[in-house]
Length: 488
Image (cartoon, rainbow, N blue to C red):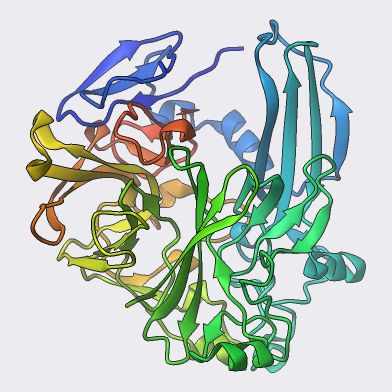
């Protein structure tokens, strides 16, 4: 089996193409110094591989899983490294229909968690999978029909007459899976995590972390809104969303996650950031803050000193949702204005704990996923010249118009021009010793190629020693297209 990957050494203005068979991380790898794309075959233009055979395979990726599985993998090419032992968990939409009716959007699909357990000492590999069996999933499975409203537009039959005033959303638990404190969680950003059995993948219910999050059990069905008074919120059953992308901090041995709820008038978000011990899950720090935004960011990053979010310029029209005519994402619009970058000082950071800084821009890009961020002394200079580097997958420019609601259908085809190409950007923020952070600049990397889902070795999260960024790669032309040619 030929493994293809792409690694980007992201701090240089000029890329090089190099062939590589293996990249090994040293305990302390050298800092980012040049842009490199590593691959074992020459790059192909997307149209050369987007043929009828590949299109059929692409379509199968959006077919519902036929069941849940548990078996030992018998076919292994080559041999498993003796020192490779552990489990890889993956989560994503795995069911796209009920009662013969296809969901309106693939991102409304029900969460399906897979586990690949490898024991190189015994040369064995095992696969298992299960749907995330939330109460909503089990109710819809039993009825074999759509019973709940969904974020991207799937709704119960009957139109507005059925859905008028029904503001409860199904938690598909389909975005991510993470483990810390000896527990495993299926995540979706507008509800609480769903705890899973680490060994059987059985669902164990919503996780409120000992009562510090609101479960949303009440007359309003977990609506992620706050009155500003905790007691009233709990009486009304108002819930909180929890990020689908928590970040490990191996330097402090903590997992960082955050919960949010919108104010009643949708003018801001009330946010709580938590740091839990990676090994035992004990709560070590809690930071409360207000975000001047109508919608919660999809992703965030951490550095040694800061939590960082990029707020895309968006507007939410709640009336169509409340009236039962549209899902929440269908009610979102991009405004064409510049993004706002928000930094909040972490405990033991250089600023007062919880101090917030907002960097307003006139740059109308749209941040989707962050690879990483870290702080370093620019050019090896003194602490007086410290900078923060942020690496983001983003649409280069968005105008005023609809958000992802116009990307739907049974099988998404990214080459139809509805969604801009996603590119990798580096943003540099100055961290003066005697003043607030200030934006220095932003530049595109990897020659503007179409990419997404950038990641780093999690052992170097928030660490300037990080060297490589890995990502899916579509084409070198910077055009939105299907499918990705390889993954990093």
